[in-house]
Amino acid sequence: MRVIIAIIFAFFLSGCSRVELIEANSKTIHDHVSSFKGEKAVLLNVWSTWCVPCVEEFPMIVNLGKEFKDLKVVFVSADFDDHFDGVKKFLNKQNISGVSFMKNEKDQPFINGIHPEWSGSLPFTILFGKNSGTIVNFWEGQEPESKFRQAIHLALNE
Amino acid sequence: MKKILSILTGITFLIAGELEIGSTMPLMDHQLADISGKSMTLTDAKGDAGTLVIFSCNTCPWVLAWEDRYVTLAQEFIPKGIGLIAVNSNESQFESDDSMEEMIEHAQEMGYNFPYTQDPGSRLATAFGARKTPHIYLFDEKDKLVYRGAIDDNARKPRKVKHTFLADALNALLTGDKIDPVSTKALGCSIKFN
Image 1 (tube, each protein chain N blue to C red):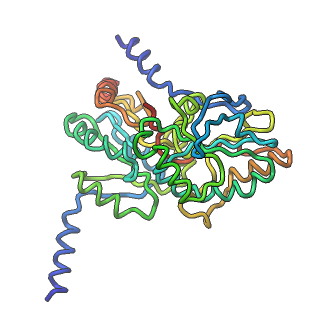
Image 2 (image 1 turned 45 degrees about the vertical axis):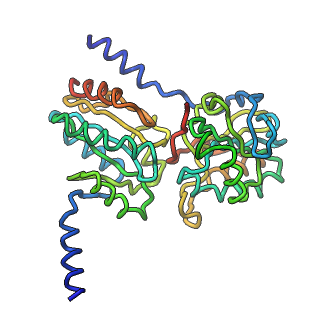
Image 3 (image 1 turned 90 degrees about the vertical axis):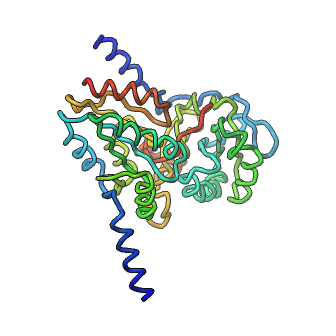
């Protein structure tokens, strides 16, 4: 009986999982970003569960994604590859739904593939224009909400 | 208006530049607080054959994954004339995770066999254009930058390392061979400037 309850409970828990966490390289991630060209501006944020500033700014980014209907937020986890479940757990706790990415590429090609001017420091954020699909701003490290808002407005108008 | 926005965008694109290969070691007389209790400078840390500067800290997961290699590199290359110094530029955490007390404890636990110093004002990190930990800068005997970037290509799994970038650069420096590549990248934690 206990086993049956455990299976039902596990099934229920898996049904609660809202996020689809996909392991991907930088090219796949950019292809995903490009698919929104002409429809939505995109905020790409590379983060990690072990990066304190990443985790601190994460809920703010989630809220901005909810606030701007023409903005798509794409999160890319740069956690170590053995932390897949931990990343998924964090994303579900943050009520993230839909596709989210986790890096499955070596550091150097991943960093250069995401942006050649990125040093590899986390967090890393890029804004892509709604109509142009081109990069309108990017930065390394944690930044205040005002900087995000300014960049989002730029992206929505480009 | 669009022009103004473009200019503003251009300005925000500017991320402080990293020290270029061939540059002279900057701020060599900037006073650093070492875990030994003494003050020291990069000049004091210099080796006869070259100098390795590692921007590091106490808590970054990438530092924790890679720092065993700090110690083995020090064991191998300090006797060959390479000076090695670790620099903690996380000034906003000097009262907490990166306090001198925590640094001393961390260095003891990890068996650091080289100076581990605080960088007041994060001035060295700024001068180097270092933005993360760990971040490596290798200078030759004339204090010219010959390699910058990563230690190797696998932080968590030392046995699965395929490219020992830094060890290769050190060996090439000592034998007079060409260093290739001179610049690499790896993920790391942002330096916590004030």
